[in-house]
Length: 364
Image: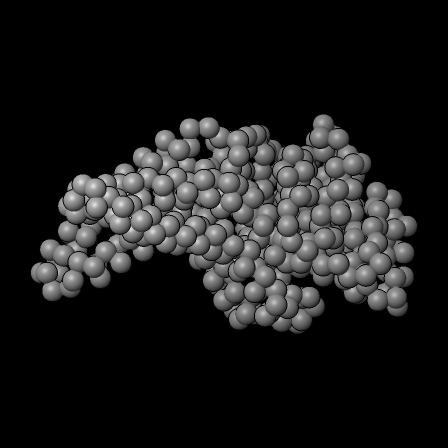
């Protein structure tokens, strides 16, 4: 390694494996520094952190109470940015304190960072098809991988890995992210996709001790937080769509009630439909831009938005006609339209996220 690599280890109530692990990391290369965060561990385990702090090229940050893995990572990142310059380091690597990440794998992640020519996130990826992998870890990761791919259009094979390498500037972005516990790591993945950060997924050794009993992951509460983070933007998008539809119907009713008395029913329906759709689509555009996708920098997104609307309208019409034909007109077109528009809704979410309101590059 040409530059220094910093290893960040958040820890809660560790055993003496932590001390041996830090020693092994430090002895593996003179270009490795270690930051350990004591996330409010029990008083009778403080001696472990005291011994760790005595080691050269190692610092211990202490939380008076348990604040969660997300907060420990953010505080470690903050220390890293304040004490290291971008020219001196290739990045920072997060690792778990229970010895599940081998020193060999950590060094491989460091090599990936050292050779990175752009802002990158390196994810140490485990093989969940091995027999010794705990059932809850295998199934949990496969579900989150599927959901993440569905919502953000990017397949990440190990969404819950704790072994991650971040280039310097991406660390700055991650400090401001929401999340105090394990959901913070999902936010990191979402941010990397949002900013088009390069994601590298080298395979690492899959190590579990005692069926992963040392993990502080709470299956119910932490899973709920993780999925709420992943679905947060989609729920906003859905609510924006529902609100726009309600506004469209309301405006149509108002416009039609006024126009039918002035110019007749037939033309009133057309004008009321067009007028209502103009205002409801503008409402949907501004909500999606400023609230759902939080895009306040890009210009000309309204052109992309209405281009998508036109394509989506013709796609809906074509697919409904096609579906009605292949079902030999047995299924009512309204039912086919519900299914088609539901699919197009998911596609529209991806396109708006990536193209209409997506960042053009990592520096936008």
